[in-house]
Length: 76
Image 1 (cartoon, rainbow, N blue to C red):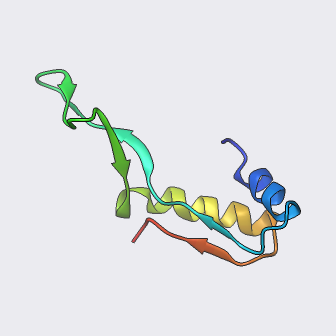
Image 2 (spheres, rainbow, N blue to C red):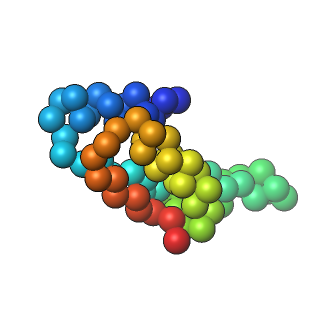
């Protein structure tokens, strides 16, 4: 999704009373020495302080696009 504001507008136009965003981002960690994934499932969820700047940007973009309550989550 490159335009989170557009998506928020779509769900509000569809009847949503509020929007919630973000939880985790799909991410991957590689061991630079073995060149193999660090996670057993290869891909996992990235959350917490690592995504805070991204989450704040997304909440701000949505706040500019819609005027319903916004629930931000996933970043400390």
